[in-house]
Image (cartoon, rainbow, N blue to C red; front, side):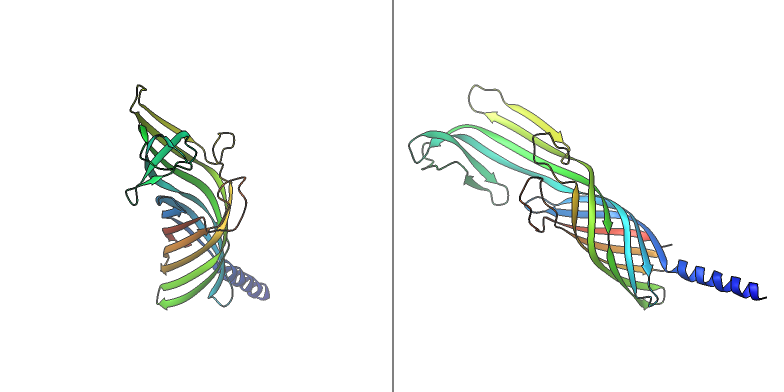
Length: 255
């Protein structure tokens, strides 16, 4: 009889301890906006793992996620040629068309005026990018019961991420006005891969995240918001800054 009581007590403790752990596989979409770039839709998939303390309202939550985020298609036009600078020399000059304002911006070096601007051609450029990461959040989570079978939660904390791969695509179309032939070229490269001759994105990334969610029985809907603070490119002077914002929307099932 005593052995049976001890066995039941041990099983009860084991079940109680197990009940404190929750695993929530989830998947959904995200929207990322890098500083100075166009927003891009991506996706997020993985699983959250949380451990609830005795109070029931406080948990530690982590997990592992596969995240794709990037930069949407940005494009700009350029009218190029030569003009006279402040010293009377003819130098290369470009007038860029700002897509957001439809204004022509003089981007030439020390141009005196544009009255003698000799147009040599028109050039169109475009670029887009996506990056893929494995992301690990470390969050403090707060839960409370709204009504029967419905729980709400709020979680906040840092995250760490490692870049797996990605693709940057650059396109250029040139329409010269002289005797040269027009051309159309497209280049692509891995933004994490050094030795390509382009700015290299660091594989390590980090930032802060906040998450809000609702669970109806075992079905969980979550909204997350990441603030990326990692360095933008390798070799640049490092300083903490909010380099991108990512909002995510996922649906999962809690075990």
